[in-house]
Amino acid sequence: MKKSVLTRYRVLAYTTGVLLVLLCLSMIAKYGLDIDGAADVTRVVAIAHGWLYVVYLVFAFDLGSKARWPVGKQLWVLLAGTIPTAAFFVERRISRELEGRVAAPAEPVAAKA
Image (tube, rainbow, N blue to C red; front, side, top):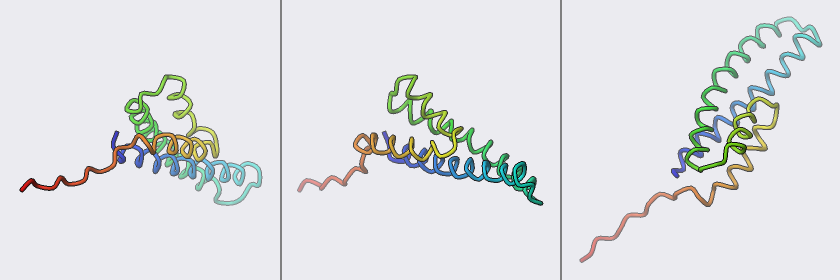
């Protein structure tokens, strides 16, 4: 498995996690605190999180299929983007697990003389 597969999953996991936390905070500001302008922020963050979550699903599924995870583990990773802060913990655990399995870049072979 290439390192780029894990890297793109990690980037989307963090991005999705941050946007989900921002979405929760903006919804608290909109509905709980009734702050002016919070509705606009909520709308923008919700749209961004929605689209990037779809990309996260694609990358996480690709990673899971290349890592040959069982269905239960795959679903656990896919759902991590829907629970605030869960994506951070799941990403860290998955990264630690797969670091040893990620192929290092091949070193050039010395020419025989």
